[in-house]
Image (cartoon, rainbow, N blue to C red):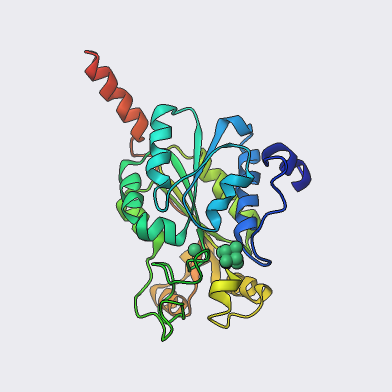
Length: 280
Ligand code: SF4
Ligand code: MG
């Protein structure tokens, strides 16, 4: 299905054009979510999209799923409550890197630990875009930010390693340059039963790009092209080559981890209900 038909099918009438800046990656990721939902054969009523606060979280205003634009950092607990109330819904969470890993960081680790069946799509542009370019826990060390005019001194999280260590059962990454891959891994994340996280490496040309002299939006896309390494190629590297690649700012993309060996939270909770009702 072409994008025009997908807009007709899944977008809220009268809400386009969007207000994201030219060259922003947010539209690419939102388009990938829609394509992934369509790939899974889901109607708009079978899906809920819950967002936090930030430029990326505007996505819930454009899409005609069951949506809620919630509080800063609190998309995951609200999505968890929704999933508990209606486990049949496919619940997707749209969250920025600041929203998800700073104020919402605690919710991230506990949603992962519970293995609740949510699909978390992280719009990672390495900065707080909406509020003017403050550094987030995903801003690379040595970057310029409005809160770090003399460069950041903190290392950034490896988001997927963090989520995996906390208990996430599906971890994937793509960039806004690798769109078909992004659609594919979001679709797989939606199909996965359990907590899935998809890190979407994105570009904020206004508040990250300008401060860090990253160049035009096209140059930022070229950076993504040159730094994202397909998992199969990444796995072929020995430890020395991987260390060199990491030192050069490269990262693996694709489905990096998946297991179906952990019970999903709402299913475990059904057993609690049965026990409470006197069943086994
Ligand atoms: Fe996108 Fe950055 Fe503009 Fe926000 S400020 S819409 S993240 S380019
Ligand atoms: Mg951000």
